[in-house]
Image (cartoon, rainbow, N blue to C red):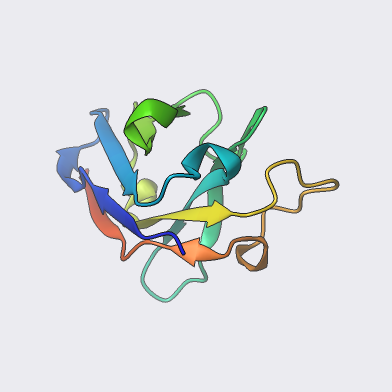
Length: 124
């Protein structure tokens, strides 16, 4: 069982930056691939980034967001730069028991554990 707690959300102006953190419980954090998803009002939850042996990004955030992890701290981060109003959403971190997933599709079904989410609001 893994418990995930996100933090770092808030209100920021367009062009600004935020860094989200996700703290995980358990001693096997390094065995999990970690991901970030987001969900805007009235929309489905969508993939943002994933980190395992490699990093993966949605096209909409590539070049602006960076996912990283510190296994010693059981924490995964999402550095978000050049934020846009369309980045406004609740951001969720998630853990995938399959660290190296062949043919990864970046869907919610690939993840086993989820945090409660943190709100990010970007004003224009």
